[in-house]
Length: 525
Image 1 (cartoon, rainbow, N blue to C red):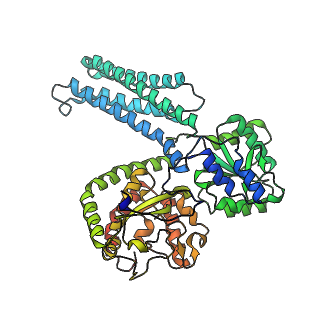
Image 2 (cartoon, rainbow, N blue to C red):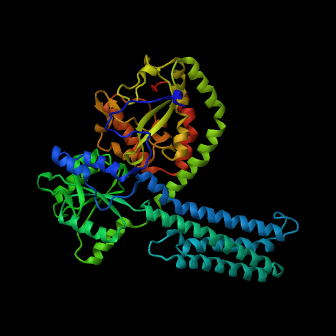
Image 3 (cartoon, rainbow, N blue to C red):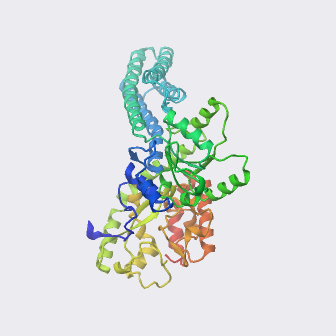
């Protein structure tokens, strides 16, 4: 495998791009402390500090979000189990088979199944509330199954009395299966809570009295992690706030290696200082992380309500409209379509790999560190299209027409976008999506300036997973970016997509991608 990979060099102090996505507390604390620039003595002390909220295992926002979507997976599996039992029982009681069964024979099962699934959702069991005991949760599951069974039995008595016994068996089987499934679901959620997977990570901006109260209350509740504090007034700010280390100023937060692990940025400054709040909101608006202004409440119950809002919904809500439902649908779309594409395109993979191998010496695959969801660093796979010795892993020199680094086969691969096919692996791993903003190389430059510094909203494109194709790609903005105007147009198109994303828009973008790319003779790729 080593001979097939083209890798990049990196500074010795940077973490490996293809290292495991989880870091231990000491490892990320070293990253956090490294950003503190207060002199050699204080930096050394900072590296040894550990805040009171340090989790045992660090999971980035994408990984924790995937766990939050488990509620949708649990409900889907429950639904499939109920449907399978319903079809099986309806088929068994009908001598002529399911298709030949009279409507009166299958109606009790069908109506009962609909009532059961609706009752499970309506009872709130998929919320897996932190304060709900297991016996209460299982009681709600039992009540849902019993209620649906009662409806089905009543229908059977009215429509097909001979099937009453079969409907009772169906109801009992549903209860047993759902009881077993929800024991597994509850244990899985309990494990996630125990290891911190469902605990939101926040950083606080402002080493103020508001921050002290927030951290003090959070220590008592233990349902959110405060990873660090950032304050522009470093000269008069303490080294830590209630044991949580001060890691630098706001500028340090903008480029901090901790940001992919952060769910919320909390402004703990006096809301009356409107000019300062506006300035901080403007500067932090360039990050993909959610920013919340903490208004200091006077009463203890109000403070608890504010913290509850930050720590709420460890699992995604099933209500509509719900952005987590859209994320679940998008992930399901990626797994089904991406898996079928990977299987169907295996012959193409083999032919392209052979062409690359025969065309020029070097590995078949090329990998590059790029920005993913929430500024996470991911390793993106491609078929190698450049001469191995001229490969540019950081995109410091973008591709131009008649670029002498591109091989003969590479020119064909780039023109047809076949070099992007290995990114199906990234899609199935959950690092990318089939549709989304194209992932840019970390440190990519436009001219002599890093592209991310040309547009304030650049990081907004990282509020969703990057994609193999996207809105910008089918609108003509693809390939290298040579001017600031091209960067601004790409970012605007990407932000438009992030705000409009839907299941049907993704399907349409996928449908038009191939004809649009093959019909484009202008864009340099």
